Image (cartoon, rainbow, N blue to C red; front, top):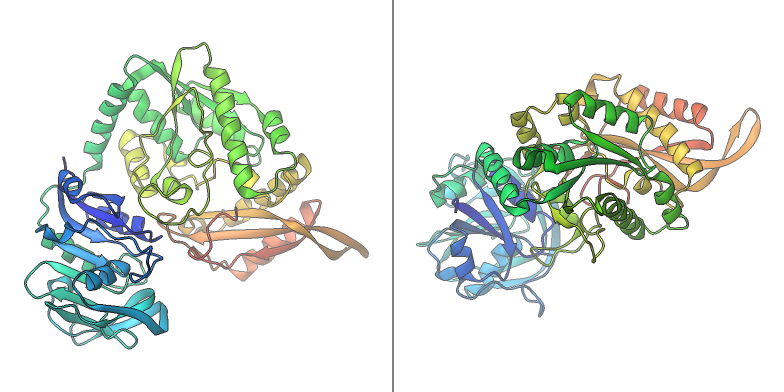
Length: 510
């Protein structure tokens, strides 16, 4: 098994960001539950261990604790936030509630030489990202302080003779200016020689699909997005014509999307069957308002349509382009972190299914999938396509989903895409779209009173969808968006702009 850094998940929403940052350094990282036995961690060929943050305080009764023999290992260990506080508690230091909580940017000073800070200016102040309400009051025996902030005198420490390190701040978050350098220094201490090679991943995954499926047939859920297309190409290379690709029109697509997607498939030479199931989806969504119920209804309907298509055709497997962030936000498979929302192809899947699911991209981040797509020769028009949720416009229509409201949102979304794509900044945006709100407001059109719907515009910058910032669109562009939507889309008389980042918000509204 490839050498790796193993991350113990204590429930932080940043855990997967730690994994991604380490992979960016060319090192394979794996996330496991916080209570994974030490023997299992060693089986994973761990050359280093990271203890993640957590929503818990280490002194709480229900606080998650790892295998008690974890520190008997000889590999380097880095504790981040809660991970550092656990190390403090484990070695008889003291962690207490801080009088002043520390959330956001802070400045630290480096107080002792440490290999963790190699290459950093010892005399300078360094900007880091803090997110904690507890702090270390008493240094554990055998450790020395290596970093301090105004609110946290012990913002970093290391053992005087063993490769044990702790950081109160989050080096994995982009707001920590030299965070990648700190993680690289830790990885270097682990002495890993094997690189995380996506070309090897492709070869290994194709063989795994071939072995898993055997002589069976696979039905592929393909949407025209990068994830499902890459998953389909990997599977096609593994089993050839035994892959049956289906594009399901759920009635919740953007303007002209079904036609454009099918044209792209034909240009690639992919044989894809178009199934129009829009009437069934809208019938089942009738009266459904709660976003979690929407996702589950859409997920179950997708499966029902696939199983109906596959019945009698000897198909046993369902292919999906599920990514790591989908799994992270839908369930808590590797720790006590809270569920954010279900994805239609993860948390939204029904418990009882005739089809078995195969997800070759389940442990990959979006940027890794795009890199693999380039290796496979997938056209840039698909690789550059901005993310579109599986439940489609169903989760961008807050409240009731019906044909009238779908038509309104399609019209607003069409304007948003047309106008933003005229500007050179569109290439720097991760996503941009419209949302239809479940409220009405008073307006005036043609000297008459109106009482109509509100559309929200969402545009964000990101590199991985794990974190995102709202885009600072030019005022003249925002003016154009508002004017066109209100003038051209019947039923909308007000436009607002979403200026929230992720976290604390999510990119999608539902």
